[in-house]
Length: 101
View 1 (tube, helix red, strand yellow):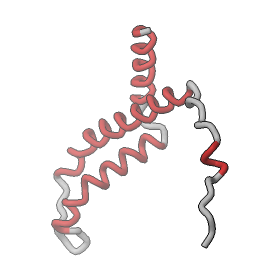
View 2 (cartoon, helix red, strand yellow):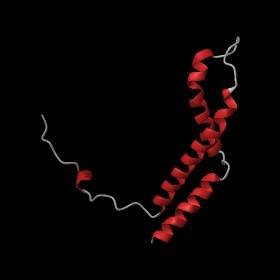
View 3 (cartoon, rainbow, N blue to C red):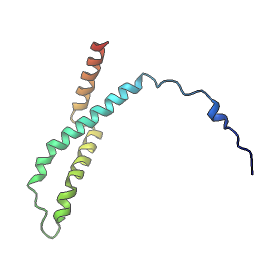
View 4 (cartoon, helix red, strand yellow):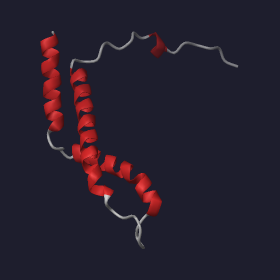
């Protein structure tokens, strides 16, 4: 059996506060999530009339999982540049933050 010892890493001071860019990055992430949600809502009607029957249709399972596919398509659209909604949301969030200060 060996003696228990304290790791030197545990004795080091806690890391300092994150840099100022972190809040902006979080704003950007939130704005992109909002844009993806908006795009998913806009894409949903495009798929409502599609039939899931037939030899290559997924039946009931396809309609069950379709919302996940739409969300993935919306996220991929945002990742590829989106429609510019996230940029506008970030700009407004920064403007509101400046006015509050």
